[in-house]
Length: 75
Image (cartoon, rainbow, N blue to C red; front, side, top):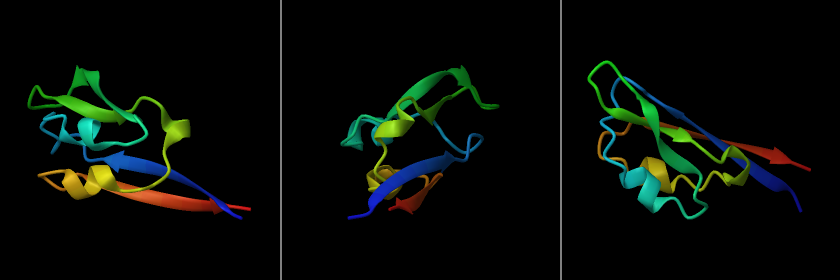
């Protein structure tokens, strides 16, 4: 059975740091960074990237649609 590895890309300048994606991640992959974007908001990032399954819960729940999810199959 193939394993699926996921990764996300966050539009840093559009992220408002609400943290909804962090709370919705079942694998506890996401966190808010200590760095801020141009508007002064902390940005979501992959604190535990190896745990990402590409489920896209974060992208679905994001109120500003700033998260893009990519999935890759490994044999």
